[in-house]
Image 1: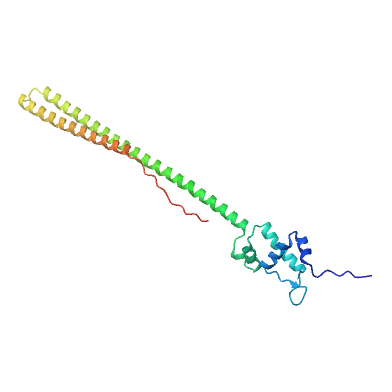
Image 2 (image 1 turned 180 degrees about the horizontal axis):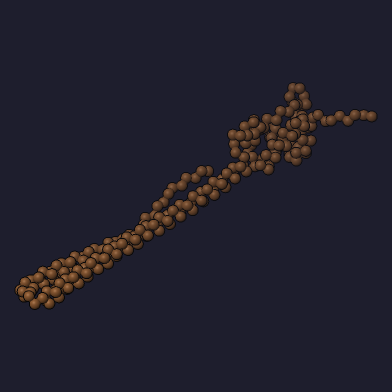
Length: 216
């Protein structure tokens, strides 16, 4: 019974058919990726002879180019054992997506920070206005209490039968002058507060812009 010998070498046409490529493309891949083949003649003028190892190597190269979208330079790096010096296409894509998500998150955080800063500024102005209104109200109450006290003193002086009329009139005039001076001071202070509030409301917060640099 004859023993069937396993084929050792394959012609370019046979290899092109196995890999489903043209003979021209097979020749380009063989030359560019330095596939170590033999020649049918010892002087190197014959056709290439491909081994099974050559075919498997070419099959893997085609897979990297077709399925993994490797460039020819990346395939050369892989073939030379330098696959760790570059990032695979799908890994790079995942990395880019991750970076995009981080950048989007950072932009959202910046937008939130800007809105928070604007809110804090408005809140601070509102609190300042409230405090000024409270101070104004407190001053008005103090002035009202002072006027009541003066009025009570006037009534007390007028009801005293032993009071000297001239001295009484003098004291009333002095009290009126002090009351009028306090009223003028109060009115002036209130006007200043109103002017300050008006200037604050007319001011607009400046928006802050930050530069961003692309990573790819």
